[in-house]
Length: 114
Length: 111
Image (cartoon, rainbow over all chains, first blue to last red; front, side):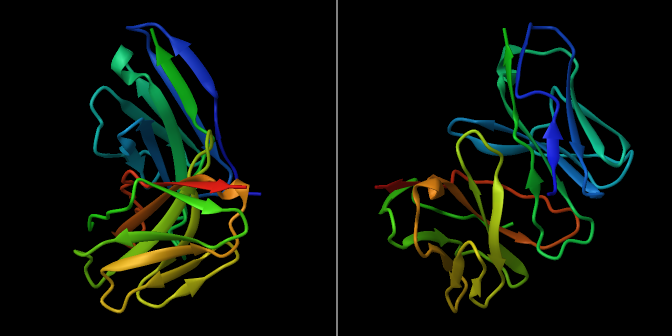
């Protein structure tokens, strides 16, 4: 079974804390993505990476950074968490040579910033 | 990527076919139609995609109109486990795979 795993299902942090969300995939995929999902706004792309050490801004990168040091791992970093970053965070991966552009998603991390 | 329009919600009786429509009137010739779904508390899951021909797999069928301005996802025998939000996405197939999710259709399958 192909798998995308995320480090936590639920996370509670305080305003101003530095937060790391980790995502690992075991499919040897080149492309990885971070989305956030909020009621009424759907899924929005934060950052994506198409190779190790490569990153591209998505639609809402402000307040976030990412790290891709190894092919299987893509980290989302909140340098100084704020309450408006309370959300569900979803990671996904995609083969670099997709036959059907099927993104595989992790289970999500529900982050609450107090 | 072209914009899509879906009804916000639909109901379907268990065992009956669920037909989920999507309008994409500004679709261009090299854009594919993708369908994903998201069951509560899970990440989205790929269902099917197509360019201009109708497609079928073990999960669903995709019917694309001849002018490609709309499509319908068909779940032939809906079960309670098919209750989910269904997203229709139009995009150019490329290696970067960036997807833009709209609001989707919440399908409620009722016993």
